[in-house]
Image (cartoon, rainbow, N blue to C red; front, side, top):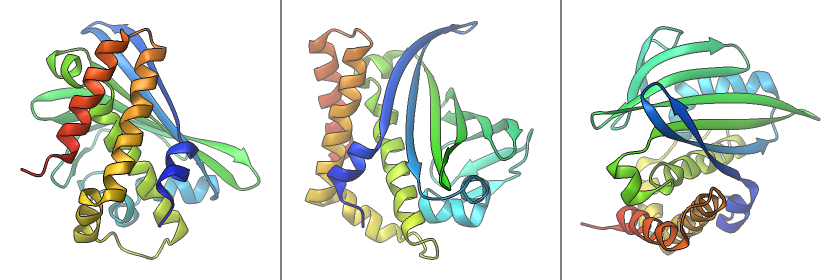
Length: 210
């Protein structure tokens, strides 16, 4: 398993804002470079069997215009598919709709950058938890991707993953991720007290045992 601190430091995180017809939104971007080529990385993000090894089991029609559903998580509609460069979809969960886009960028020497952009509305949930609410989850996803590419044939062990999240190592990962997203929040101009409050609320929510 990849070292927690090393993994956190290998990831690039940014936060921006945008105005859509629906109103003001925040745009979170997370990315990491992996030692695999573009074609293999496309298989990683488009093949249901491989997606289940690093993220979650997924069902549905994984083509442009198709509906998808992650087990126990979000579902939505695939709005654009540009093989092998990018895929975009709605992200529908808990009665809320946001948008995700995955971009694959060749980095040379057989390496590829996985870049995920999540566009989320500014609402009460955002005001309470800030970027870490989805950011920590995506940090865990790119960490899962790193471990998958280190051992591509190994299946994802759900019980082991849950146990890890409750371990000291898992909690340290989430604390480091929460702090990193708070730093991105500050860089956008958020009041330091608000950024700290939201990061603390997010970390508490992720590490709650009841």
